[in-house]
Image 1 (cartoon, rainbow, N blue to C red):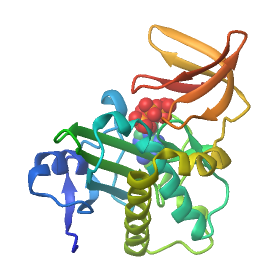
Image 2: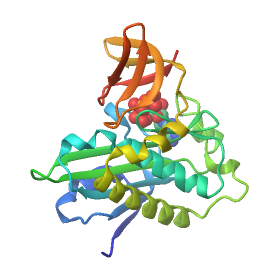
Image 3: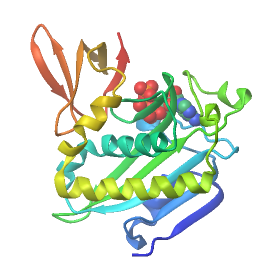
Image 4: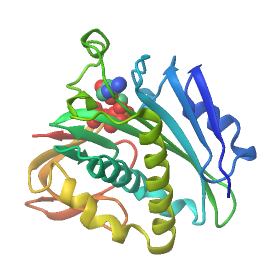
Length: 243
Ligand code: ATP
């Protein structure tokens, strides 16, 4: 199937654009922008999206599964982005559950997946991702946590090439996920997980729970071990912090 790319110099949010046009879209269609005036993260947070050849993109996908299977999707897409960058020779990448990609322990990229049940057996997904390519210090000063970008690469990839590679890898992985579920991705995720076997705290306002991170399970839940045993946690309201 031919896919379409909706390209904008400037837009509010590529995810919002795709949400507004979901009924007209085909799986694999993408929206790409040079600048987002209202780039979004999880739970109303902002994704800083200045000009400067950074990647702001959203991919539409009609998943052949009901919404209950969607909890592990940000992990699949995290694996896709890491694999694409590793194939280009980027070293020092890591993932943080459930939706962040780090380079040298600083935040390089974020994933924002928005979804809705389409029918009994289908779920519409908007998979948004932002990747910092070469952030100036002035731009980066506006980010309230340590950040990184791809300018450390010896050969910085062309942005269009990178987008095409990401598009291909994410589509391939989504098809694998539809056919085989998350189990196929567990090793890939755990190999890149920055917090595996480390002490972490899961913030679930107003509560929090501390323990040793034991990776993820086949539903995309994070496994935490403490005196009470191993427990699985999943849900969009949880944030992971190093303890
Ligand atoms: P956290 O990453 O703090 O655990 P989260 O996963 O909920 O929380 P996201 O919604 O994925 O966070 O991303 C939003 C956060 O990412 C912002 O609050 C900000 O701290 C950070 N951020 C925003 N823009 C950028 C950027 N361009 N590069 C790196 N980090 C950014």
